[in-house]
Image 1: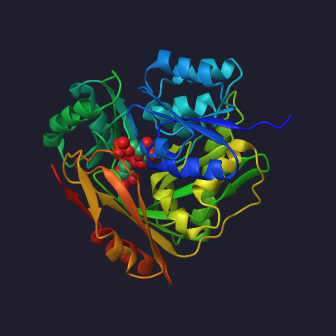
Image 2: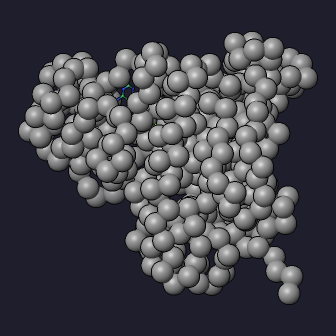
Length: 392
Ligand SMILES: Nc1ncnc2c1ncn2[C@@H]1O[C@H](COP(=O)(O)OP(=O)(O)OP(=O)(O)O)[C@@H](O)[C@H]1O
Ligand SMILES: NCC(=O)N[C@@H]1O[C@H](COP(=O)([O-])[O-])[C@@H](O)[C@H]1O
Ligand SMILES: [Mg+2]
């Protein structure tokens, strides 16, 4: 009997919104979940459920009531023990409950990558008190980077130049961590030449890679990304081999299918593994303009078990973020016409988040160009033209 694929999306931000559009184009029904109403993906989904993704009871209840064919995590902070239970009951968690569990905790994924798989990473140590932070920093040396083991988008992260900075970095991490575990990773600061995200798709036909995406981060959060990033053949081959290894290791009891954003630092020909998302990556929003099938289309195909033929060559393109700078519940976007008026090589995605806060990502400008430098300049110019007009 014909059957409509139902997908339950856990987290409904900008990445989920684009994924929902891709999945719906292929005939899926999408139920978007997040902690607040009118989240970006909810505005384009078939149905919505509002509850905190860390509330295990509510999560179980929502899954049991909708009985989705696929459960697609969109944020990192999810009650992952419940995902493991649901997987054991026969639900398909994308890419697997193991992947969600390991990547939610920096210590778990780092132990796997560095310890079990032997990938090159920065020197690191964990700490659960200021005394342990001091010992860890003595091990990594200065400068070092301190991050809560549970956080994303740079929350609670600081770069520390000498022992004087350790107390405030520890306090900042504790104040901005997620969950109830006061635990940080202290990492050697890598003075990289550039950093990349390697979108890696694991699907029924095997593993395929997108062209590498270069990006620039501020405060641990991305500001601009571009594709294809120039890399030596050797560095690219090493990054691909490391990405394939870590992605394979995340399969667990699930199918392990989906798109992953694998992050690397590159210094000369040396490739250093940083972390990965078992889902579309924010820096990968550029693929909405650079690739025939975007990272969202590829994730939707991999989730739904649909054909993926191989590499998706990118044309030179870039993305630049549009950030809010204060709290507001009543605002509008100005300058959209000016941004789009820059020419046919420019496009925008306005996410439709119902409220702003300082540094919250509200939209992204996209551009193509003769080369990535031209595309970057154009995307940044377009992003600057879009302004948020606050009315409260
Ligand atoms: N050890 C390091 N050395 C140099 N730079 C680093 C290091 N760790 C992090 N950074 C910088 O901070 C950025 C964010 O770090 P990371 O990806 O670990 O944070 P995150 O909170 O997981 O972000 P997201 O969830 O958006 O991926 C990196 O992309 C890089 O620019
Ligand atoms: N680096 C992870 C990332 O970019 N995640 C994206 O941001 C949303 C949360 O945004 P918000 O904090 O503005 O609600 C998430 O739902 C996801 O789409
Ligand atoms: Mg990251």
